[in-house]
Image (cartoon, rainbow, N blue to C red):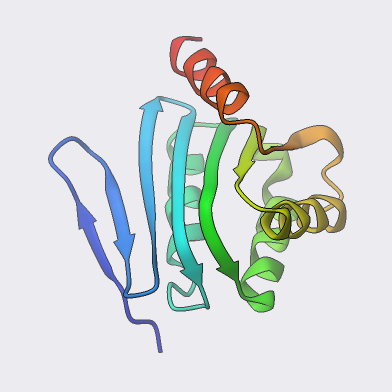
Length: 142
């Protein structure tokens, strides 16, 4: 059973939160979405996080996706499989995916998803905060 709340803030920020973790979705401009993930995703969000990204793809594509997963501590195997499937299914609607990781574990999880989704160079993974922030700024201003 999915146990989380969904709040849309006055500035447009959408937040999904549970006791274990959260997702924050901020449209930087049409075609660019910043997703900030914290804590654990044990499946408590169901398809909600992916649905937020699918809705943004419907609004504007190709979508540049910037994922700040630096504070993510755990992703259930089933959740990782769902993200891999999402990337595989949506690869033609995505312009670029940049992912910031904060641990070797998350770097490995995202790298496996990148490989299994067969998306080639669509997804880049980094643990360099400055490089990720620069990519966010470039995307915001492009």
